Length: 257
Ligand SMILES: Nc1ncnc2c1ncn2[C@@H]1O[C@H](COP(=O)(O)OP(=O)(O)OP(=O)(O)O)[C@@H](O)[C@H]1O
Image (cartoon, rainbow, N blue to C red; front, side, top):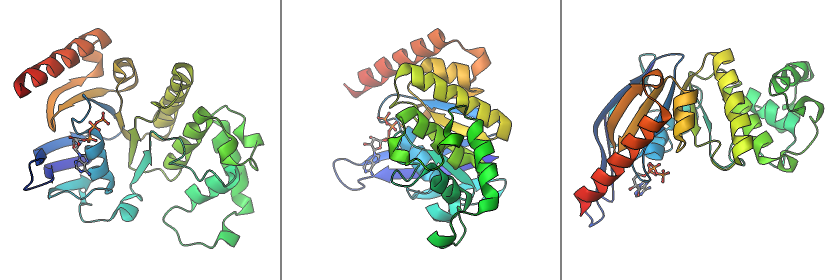
């Protein structure tokens, strides 16, 4: 289980732009569940993900995975427990390397190795099997450079790479936002298959209400660093969610004026 306890994060402290985004923020994510985080621009979705992944340091608070306090671990150490797929299809892969080299890199995550010894012949069949699950024919293109793949193919590969070492938590940071609607749906479906097959605990950011309801077990809505909705996806429709989202935005805008 991923637990966030008494989290604080402020930006630009002591200036006119001081932003006390998270103040005593608490949340827990149960094992084998997919949670979606929605909320308007600037509500803190990416910051929360950065704080979990360790690419941003919290001012205070504890982040625990299965009871282990990882708050003081650097991003690299946390990556042993946490896989992440970013919005930008180039971020989760090494574009100038081949599919095979990328798979081997993901396989060697958190291990020391030399480039010469990157690819182990006895692992190639396993990579092919894994690639086959994507149903994109990538297992037949092991020597193709990743920068020649389409955005959807790259995101699918990123997903596979991020989950290869069975992380305890998978963070999906608007990972389909840069794709066209059809490809986005294909990648979302592949995501769900993978999450279910590998029994991953997933936290996903999206702006798509349909994806939020359809592809997750739980929906969290954030506004200015606070949880304003926390519901099982089965208890809310896309239309209801959208209405609440609009109402919250209007409420927030009225409050600023
Ligand atoms: N490094 C930073 N320095 C200063 N302010 C920051 C920094 N990172 C985030 N913020 C501020 O924190 C708030 C939350 O930003 P964040 O990127 O987490 O929002 P978001 O919900 O992910 O938005 P979007 O949907 O636009 O991606 C914003 O007001 C943003 O300006």
